Image (cartoon, rainbow, N blue to C red; front, side, top):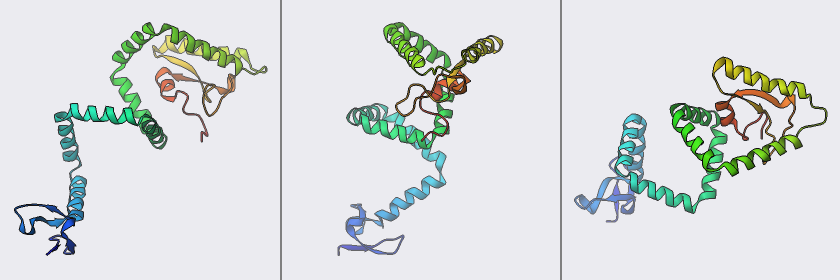
Length: 210
C-alpha cells in the first residue's frame, strides 16, 4: 500500500508526503509533511522567545561553519546581496536608522578609534574625497546664493558645538553628490544636524525622494 491517512488532517496521502521513520508502520511518520510543517509554524508563533533562544544557541554552536557559508555565499552573490540590502533599507528606513543609531551609541569609542586609525592609514584617500566634495560644492553654488546666510549656518554649528559639547554639522537637505539627484549649495538647501544624524542620512535620503 503506497498511501496513508494523516493522523492530523485525516487526508489519504501518498507515502512520499510523509517523512521516513523506520520504526513506524509503513516506514513513515503518522503526520504528513504539510501538517508537520504547520505544526512547526504554530509552535514558533506560540513560543517566539524560545524560538529566538534556540536560534541563538544553534548559531553559538555552529558559528564557524555558519560564518564560512555566509562569507562564501556573499563572495558569490555580492550584487544580489547589495540589492537586497538596499531594498530592505528602503522598506524599513526608520528601523534601519534606529538600529544604526543604537549601534553607534553602544560602540561610540570603538568606532571613533577605528575611524581615527583608518584616516591615519588613508590620508591620501581622505584628501582626495575632500577635494572632490569641495569641487562639487563649488559647481553646485549658483550665482545668486546668499554667502552671508550660508556662513551663518557654519557659525551656528560652531557655537552649538561649544555650548552643548555635541558634534553638529551643516548638511545639504538634497545631497549635492548623488547618483539620483544633485542639490544646490545654497541657504535654502542647508540644515543643521548632529554628526550622528548626518552620518545616518548620508547621501541616500531627501524630501520627496523616489
